[in-house]
Image (cartoon, rainbow, N blue to C red; front, side, top):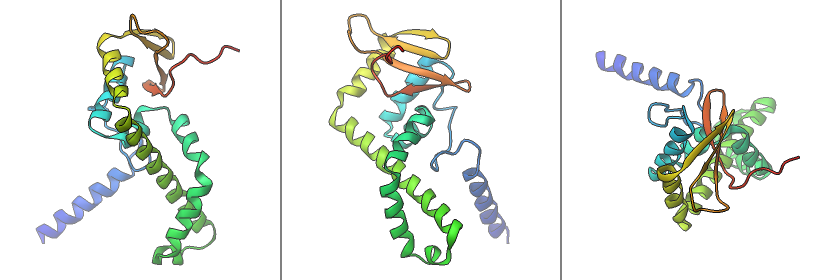
Length: 184
């Protein structure tokens, strides 16, 4: 009986954990390991996530939500078709109708799009290992300049390349760009 209670308690704890605030694409935040309280902390967390091959964490929590969500939205149509086909062949998919089915298709499509994006990040970093070397150099030698909600990291002697971070709701996020945005 005690064993059953422990198993049920474990199930409930894991179920509650998956519904925690901050869960993005099924990835829970881990601010103790991946700190974002300063631009330097955020860049160190990006390097750590890449070293650990946690591209899912990098995309879900260390890069701006609007950037990641817009990338996934670009391929939403394709992944909605794939998700609908996948769900059609399951008992769950057959039992859903109307708005419930549409919501489940959208949810599955978002997860498929997220997986595609993180797989592409993994492939790019595997194909271009100098990117990680550069990030480490910027972390080690970089000059971090903050201006309000934005930060720039530069390395003396490296021309035409900077790392940009932005602060949103008290956390710093790595931006996937190398140049200053055009001034209007």
